[in-house]
Amino acid sequence: MAGNIRQVFPEHLPPLLELLSRDPVAHCFVESRVHVGGVDPWKLGGEVLGYFRDDQLVSAMYSGANLIPIETTPEARSAFVDYLRPRMRRSSSMLGKAEEVLDLWRMLEPAWGQARAIRHAQPLMAISTDSHVPIDPEVRRIHINELDAYLPASIDMFTEEIGVSPVSGGNLAGYRARVSELIRAGRAFGRMHDGEVEFKAEIGSVSPMVCQVQGVWVARDLRGQGLSIPGMAAVVELARATFTPTVSLYVNDFNTPARKSYISVGFEQVGTFATVLF
Image (spheres, rainbow, N blue to C red):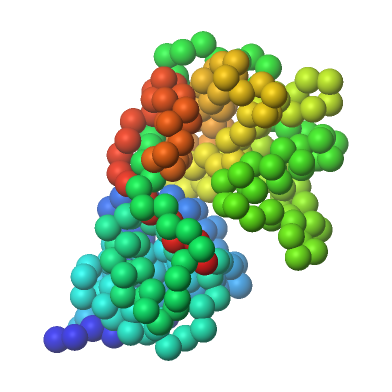
């Protein structure tokens, strides 16, 4: 019997959590949102769509600023595409397990048009112990009174990674507020010298067992000088002591220096992501 797509409601929370638990590292972002806000679209910043068969939740998709497939079967992906194809695209990207994302995009591209960029293979990496390499003792939590120094580094990192400035189109106030929120939550870490950021990283998502690092950045004039490995080792130690036993991240496959740094710290590849940027 063919399934159908409909919104996931609170009564479907147990089977949704079961889907997320199948791969806690891959589903860290969505699980972190659901853990705090359930499936309330206002709290989630989006909605969770479900693929149901015989009234049983088989697969799901987070639909907000990002589209994120959750344990989608081939049949579920076809159904999600049929649901999404005629609707106006509201997300700025689609990301998640590479097999699922790339299959969805293969079917959606004829209707939605060419993507701005496709990252076909992004190693998903995780570490569940403190690093074996010495940490940088100067890496610490960023304080809110350092926001003005920290913000330019965040903007530079985002622009390098995504190819578009996060403050374009008059969005400076909104982006500043988001960075401020991370700092106030104790999720922004960095090495500061003479009021300038030399190394930074943030914990973007925190689920019950996994937290995800984002925004890793080294000042341009200090790259190649060995700051990233002890810096990331410090972030892993601080994150594990504060948030969750497992620390994860994903990285572009073509970013060889970053991949080597993460491997040196002790991260191991546990999967592959893909991202489609609109």
